Length: 138
Image (cartoon, rainbow, N blue to C red; front, side):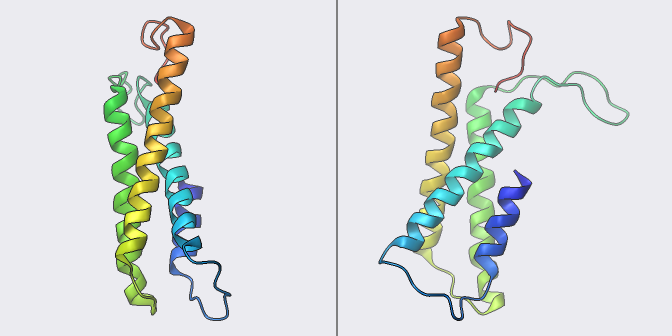
């Protein structure tokens, strides 16, 4: 997740001088795909951490999260991060764009939905919920 965030941050904040422009809408597709990946890996990370023992002094088992909460977390992290990157673009001499922010949010929704569908399919195939099997949501 952090690697995807770092890549998104670098790509969002690098100056665009000397970079050739692609076909119309190519940047929106890139925003969509990048933030779909970010939302998906965030959902995956949130799902894997559910039900695991805590770190540090508190080693009690964490309460499992519902899939809807995991999807909401993945979507929110990606949208907030995308909004922050658009806002920071003004500080580095680039123009923030509402269109880019919309593409980020649409990609985040798609990535979270893909995680949700994958999760539902895994549960349907196994016939056993992850909690019954003693595994966190994946």
